Image (tube, rainbow, N blue to C red; front, side):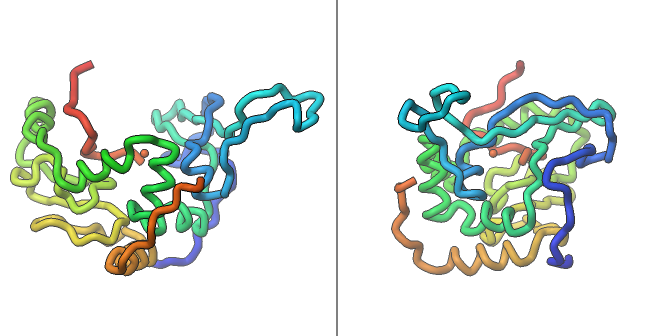
Length: 219
């Protein structure tokens, strides 16, 4: 796959999936971790010392819009990141600096990440929940599945693809899709093989088969 930068609008004006123009927008807040990691924008508290006349005091976060496509149902963020911004977000993925900053904004992330790296113990419950809706054997694409250690239906699949940019080698049977971005994977694989620097505390894409921190429950 070519690593040539892809031209895209800064703010989406059409569905990123089907290209439809029938969109509904809802005000939202960009994840503080993402805003800090990509743009260097940390949340701030506005008080009287700012001397602002028309802005109310309070916490200020990076705003955005959640966009829903009325044609295909796709739900997405209106901000479209450039290739360098995507590199900034995912470089050193789940390594010391990345994990420390994310844990700063999402307390418990580091512990949850360690649990996922060791392998969750409720995969049978996930498979039992999904089995009534699937024709077995299945073909699996685990989007963001790390090494594939937590992917359901590993032993009941005819094809087991894991899309992840961590650069870690997959478990036995896991295949990396050819469409994955080579430069990011190579950089993360190289940095994960070197000793990590001490984490600094100065400061989520959906998944086809989600490895969450708790068993699924019927809604």
